[in-house]
Image (tube, helix red, strand yellow):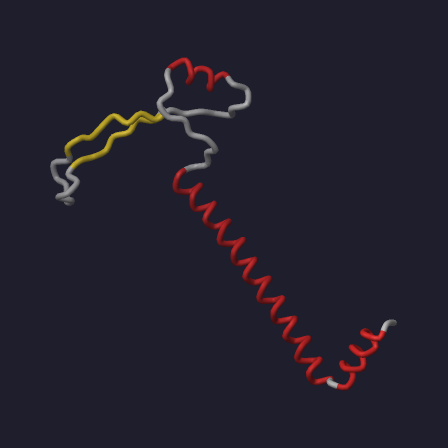
Length: 110
């Protein structure tokens, strides 16, 4: 054992109370770091599940495709399933409670 190790052990034996509080401080700091990392991981998992619930479980979206590109995606073996969405426009809602938006937005899905 070198001189530094001997001095450290001697100091720890002499100052038992300080050694105990230092050990407790280390345990508490490790617990706090663990709690923060678990909280961050849990929050990210919650945000992912919330996004999947609100927008659906999809990995890729294309816009402005022509018919041949849609057919190519439908026949591609790496694509599990596809669906198309068309925005048809707006329709007047005669008994609307919202005076700023007295209409429906109509979207067609296959």
